[in-house]
Image 1 (cartoon, rainbow over the protein chains, first blue to last red):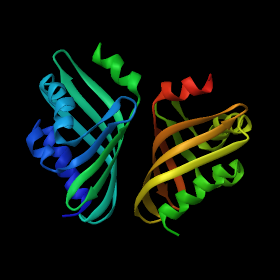
Image 2: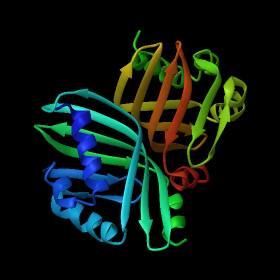
Image 3: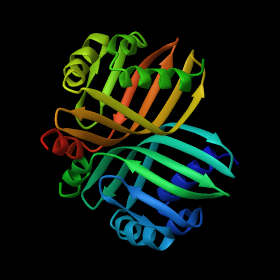
Image 4: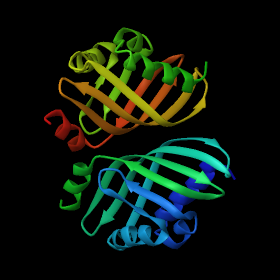
Length: 126
Length: 126
């Protein structure tokens, strides 16, 4: 398993709307930073942020267009470029994202997503 | 020379406010995409976008916090996480950015930066 494969599995868990599997892959002190919207710490904080959002979608499709990695599962870095698509009751929300994932001792300790907040908000209310 | 070293040199050229050196590293058909603000194509388009901005700063400091790469100078991909700092006449503008660089045949053919537009605009007018 490389850090890149691990992050691919993490993304796949979201595409399966399987938050339990995803959160089992993060460290107890994991920082999850949606850069323009704020950060939370740890699986509980991540669940509080992500669960309502996932519940509001009947489909999630995060499409990775590029992914690069370095290091090992002991200490590794992965970055990817994605289009994150969420199917809301009546439309697809679609947002370009660049994500950073830092791995330590087999778990994700930092997940930071860069995107444009207004592009996201415009589609939430569309 | 690896794609990552090449991109580090590209970033260094901006930190030297040396647009000629930077633009000599990009392909004639290079796409430069500031995701929330639009894209231009080729060195001339990039110069038209970047030159006025660089002229408006007396210092540029792009600080790379993480960088990962794959491939070769023939065909490679680099992503980095940065804080891009621009010293405007009376204050520092500082923005978190995640960038994607695609290399083909020794030149950058795609440079795509993800960031929050409003965070940038708020500081332009600050």
